[in-house]
Length: 633
Image (cartoon, rainbow, N blue to C red):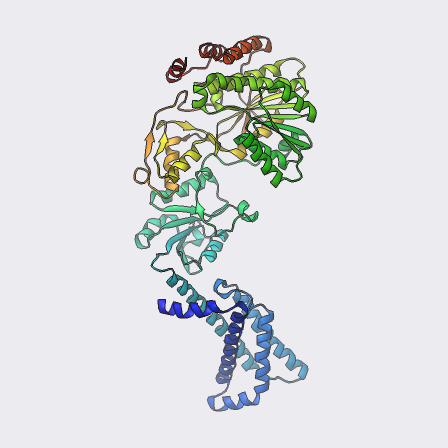
């Protein structure tokens, strides 16, 4: 086969496209001659055949010319043959029908048949058989050539899970690839089982063990782009339990946006399996505080802040103000928005949320109507090691922005909070709970015109502090994955969905509520590490180790979203809940805040922890966190 491959491939590749088309036309010309000769041979006996061919010679020549012209007009020579699928069958049939039909039309106009009708019918049938048959042989030869030139490399044997439209399209796209060899289809639908697609059998999922015993598989490609997360997890777990590596195809959104082709196979990212099924957003709630309004986002360059900016940009605000302390982060999101939303009116400001004079000048200059306060220090171990700076930024920053919003007549203020604010065991969570108290206290002041609200949720996937990108990097480098505790659990949600829920929750606020997002079921981080290793085609403990490093200072085994689980009410959105939690009046809160912030200014960690305990009685610092503070003092 290698000798045949060389004999076929080298001369063919040396031809230009026009030469290849002319070669194919010449081949068809020979086939047309064979077809008409065969038609006369079948219609008349061998002694009379040559007599009739000679008698009708000019009409036979006319038929041959008509076939070539009509085949050309119908586009039989436009496709690249080696990449052509079976769609040429309909084109060939139409071309033969038109050429024979033209002969019949000419006969009708002349008043007599140019050729016997039986000969025309037999000729048409033989033409289709020969044209289609030769093309199928050529396609088969090209495929063998490609496999031969693939050298000693064994093609990847794969099955397609999903025998629907996506699976069929994927099979058609990969059938010309020498690096892949389709072994089977797998599908849940009973009516498809034992059927064949492109000559490949469809199996039930329960038949996989038997299939693997007779036909080893390297990969299963999941070709069900619209399947929900729960079902996708079930399928992947089943396949992984059989030791099969699983890949997938792009989502419908990626394909329709022309970002990728359906044939672009990729590894499954763990982000596709975590969290729960997303509920479609309410467009009215998304637009309510954004469309046609002046909107400011603090922490605009962060994980949540930057996604807020992207989604706000889609909703056509009057103007979008980006407020960020990090120069590079601000530059990045400003550049991205400028490229993706050229008509968006926006202004980028370098600024600290604790700088009230600068912030108020921005609010007044642009007559801001809505603020999303996403700026915060959120990395637990870093804030635990730098408590004064964490409290100053998270508490005094929130106080500054909230007071500025109230003084400048901002209509809506939304604080982006965290589940770590509930019964906190670390400074970061405690500081965010104090920030919540600030917003609740200001909302409780009589005749407050600004509508203050808090949105509290858990971890978001692929944020700067998420374990997912860290695990991904460790796997890519072949290093052990580090997990702090075997039983530590966390809630997970995608950044875009979290931001949409934040915006919708803010639109439902009446003042002072704490909105909670339904985060789904918590995920054990150890299980997450195992899943990510297996999704990379590796085996935990053999290819990648998992090391237990111990809980970090201030880290909890699990997170909560509610302080008082009984005080929760549903909202008009099925995944957003509202709670009115215990708060302090502004009169009692203000002097305590001043004392806390003074302790932060002078870096007095003992006084700072003591004051936080007074403000947040449920704050229970872990022993390791206290030891860290004592070492620093």
